[in-house]
Length: 156
Image (tube, rainbow, N blue to C red; front, side, top):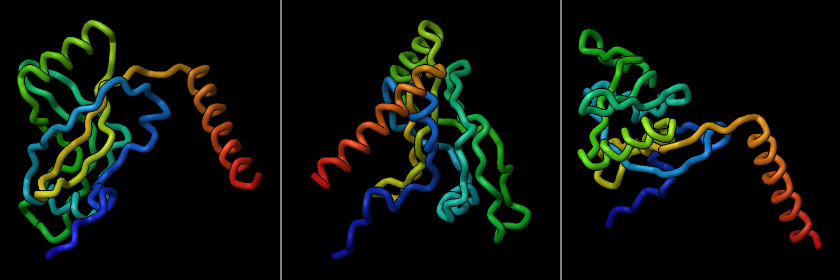
């Protein structure tokens, strides 16, 4: 019987600062349309989605500004590192996301690219609202207080 990988071991790329810069309202798992060399590059774990965002254009959802470096062993069949990648969502989900972007001024931020149990690349997409400076300071205070509280409970 094969051992299942731990939940964090199959993460190919993560946007760690997204939760600091944005207030996450809702999350959605989407599929990605990738070429073979992009999948191999993702498996190496060198991808970056820190500056990426998603955009609804027409009847499609696109991941823009993500960086998947070239796969070194593929010579002529390599991919463009910063190309736009199509995201796969149901029509009702796309309409809901597009409505939230238009109506409420929200943003679609990628949180994580990972491989599911079947080995298929997935993107965890967040519907988010930008935080301003006072909100960020408040979140930092809250985080510091929770850390200090845990230290006090552990020692006391």
